[in-house]
Image (cartoon, rainbow, N blue to C red; front, side):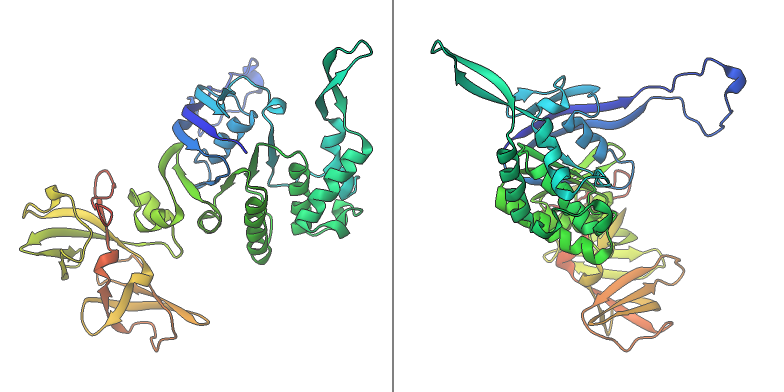
Length: 408
């Protein structure tokens, strides 16, 4: 196992080099010759045996950060420590890290056994021996066939791929190939496992299966895992902690439940959770022990401040403040009174139903999740009741949360 410390990590890609021969250079009006800041001041302490997930939209810097940990990208600024040792200038092969890629990277002409064993055949291990004069010295030697076979069989048994060992990649499914790729990383017994979107090429059903298998593998070997994905469902179901990134900047580092319950800002609130959180543009004003909430179409609701998480005092000064109000679909329910909306689309998902509704004079769709089937058709007029304990509020300018966590 291994701890990892990322301290003020930056990654800057330099300006594109100008081509020497302008005659052959094609003009591209959309080209950008400025430096690209891919990762901006990344700070994190990863403990031994953690399963950390980097998540965010494409281009947010999550894979770049992973590749800097692996040594496949140079670090523009900051310090990377593994087990307390500075790794900025250490070659990838000396970091004791194993990486699993999105495209499996298996040799097509080799059997699964040979793919798993290949790295072991190339690797040398340190060993202390005694020479003929009785002096001890350190030598480097290749693993024996018996040692390699033992390690391959051990990994095979752990992953349940014994029957695949003598097949070639072309004879395997996507999930089977990914297990072989995991096996190849596993036999090295590295300090850290790095997984770069390993399930994105698999179909939905197989992704669900492989998610649980990777989590079980982590629980068995108790090694530090860092996993990159753009799929927030994978992040929520696999990670002990999640790093949410946007445009190279860390938005929040927290447990899955805290990210869901207490998003730091509007981006995290919108990105985490399926379906996406509903966001309303509203004006709020304190009135005695209530909070008056006015929607863009003029409708008003009154929330009991005792039911809400504590709001920053500056928003409760008796004046009107324009903010974003967020609430998840499962925390809305249909009632006899409340916010008047009109049904737009009804999606029946077997035992549950998603109802998309609109406010009058608004084009945005809002979703209501019902754990049952409902007798609702498009254009029905309905009323929404908010679960006040689950309401989120964000500043209009900074988009930061203006509410404290329960107990604070």
